[in-house]
Length: 130
Image (cartoon, rainbow, N blue to C red; front, side, top):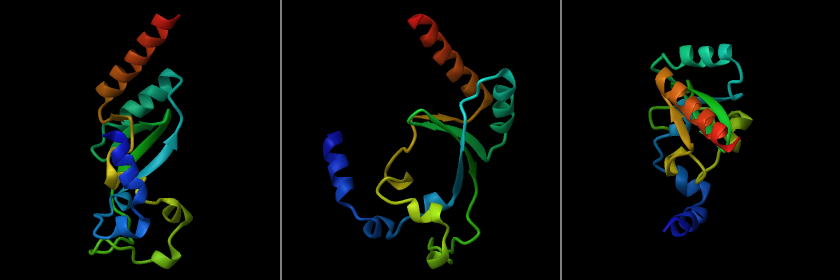
């Protein structure tokens, strides 16, 4: 079933995928961050996810801080007002490998408690292997 879905998505072109898209990629700002290594870094992330517009996600072992919002150039019709002059990051973001076609992360952390629980689970797994 998963292989069929993947094959179907691979056949979709970017143009087809973007038609009638709700422009999810233009609504959140994801910034690459390092995995927290120190107590201070964990405390900073716990403080940041206290805001209802901020969460953390992990994709392929890479950590990201996501700030929810909307690009100032996103029109009411969900089309980019500066499409021809849009930034390279926007040009590089292509369907079907995008938010519209399913979860784009393996882990989503929305609260300080979820962050602590995730780090505790990882620590326990690491200790079991040792």
